[in-house]
Length: 95
Image (cartoon, rainbow, N blue to C red; front, side, top):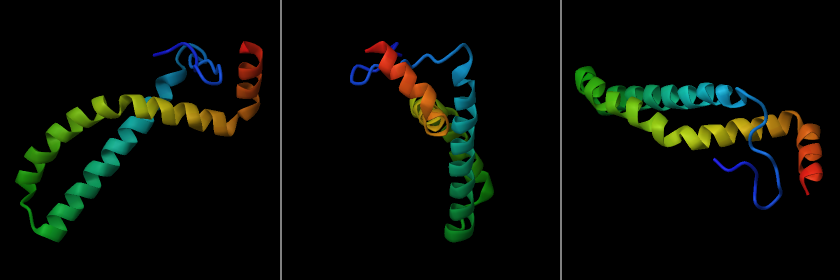
């Protein structure tokens, strides 16, 4: 991961452990997608629950690895939205 944004100079490393919250974003997105797929396929297309279990288990392993970067970006964007003053100070001081 880069230390700061090339365009605006925003530092990506906020503090130690900052991105720990992105795990919740990643887990939440994985569980929402898995639950939605299970319900739609089971109730809408009458797929057997056993088949869904074997089909969705690999998704639950692979998707979080793919979505890792996006979860971190969403966590940073959420922090930027909720505490914009900190980010304005960081960008102006790094230029």
